[in-house]
Picture (cartoon, rainbow, N blue to C red):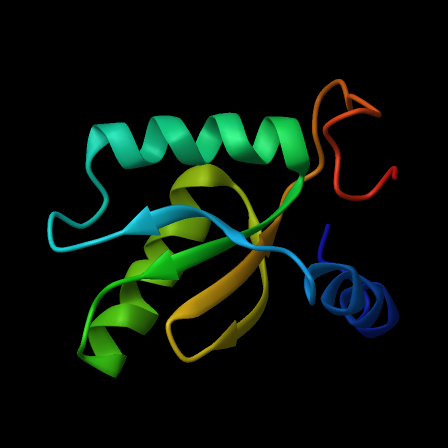
Length: 100
């Protein structure tokens, strides 16, 4: 179910102070990157991803593919940073960026 505009706004404000926890570089969406993304989304639910890709169009395509493969939703994309969200199966209060 897609997020409402108000929910996205709230998630953007929560994500403002977050640091990127996953970096996508020249190798693109490798198996290691996808494993780390899955772990980060399950632990934190709301994460920032840094994309070390120069071309804007390619970067936008990679973000779309990343969200599609991980069943996450893009909250915001500014420059080389993407804020993505996926609800955890079993949220951990100590790790989740939403439950603090």
